[in-house]
Length: 337
Ligand code: EPU
Image (cartoon, rainbow, N blue to C red; front, top):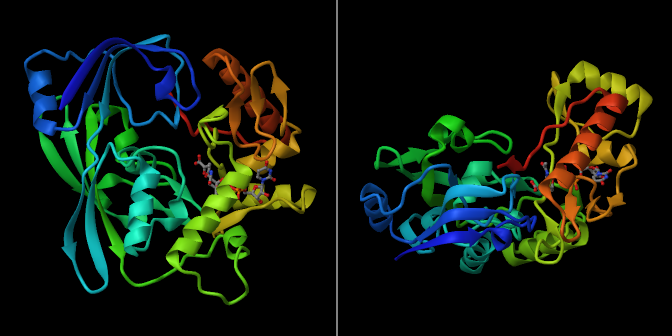
């Protein structure tokens, strides 16, 4: 199936709920049909945007050329071994529906990533992560369509260049690479990951929860801290957690003994941006339709009718104040389009 629409409003296609129009909006669940349509010139793609559910973008342009939105949702078990299983899923599948499916099957790995808004195809692009888990640890390979050369190819995990909220798919030179399918390698052995303290605290000391209990606990924590994009426009964490030098962290610790810092090695520390923004007094701030979510300062929200300029202005004011107070330059986690 391929569906092509002209002058398509993207308001329902981005979780911030911002207004923008796609000249051409293409939905496809079949790779050959999509490629045929592009090759035959039925679908041109000037000013291309590859879009999942738009849960991690800030649409700042009033119009974009062509949007390609995969809607392939097939799940297939490719191979099964005593300890693990290889499962392929189409890019258009809703992320949490897929996680729910894996949990129901008793396949471990993705349960800590429950309820993250977005599609399966977007998961490797952003290398989504939460509650002590990162999707890259569970990806075996990614099937890609290159919309420039019309080639389809597979990248294994090492070739995907995964980093913190980063991958090869974010590199502008690869902007015509469409993630089409993702192959996950999931454990059949129960191995609950309770490294994230607030998740561990959901259970009695020493308790080994079932996979569904972990998923439900993650859902509870997310709902208590993060706004539902269906109710309040937002794109999750607006900024990345900055990584600073160990020296800088030690200096900050002298002035702010309570500063949370996660050391991956003695040389660098990751500081929660939410804490920095909170310390600068922004939590719960509201000006007209834009604001900082009262329960998590890392999330900027559109209470209704905001423009991308208003959101960006607020983001810049936050960046400036964090820079002034802590000497740290926050970087956006959401993709600016
Ligand atoms: N904090 C504050 N004030 C706030 C928010 C946080 O003081 O307003 C402090 C917390 O008390 C805690 C620390 O900052 O000590 C970390 O907060 P939290 O555990 O809520 O996580 P985070 O670092 O703010 C990251 C991810 C989230 C993910 C959570 C849970 C990034 C940019 N964000 O947030 O991911 O859900 O960890 O693992 O890495 C997303 O990417 O959209 C996202 C929501």
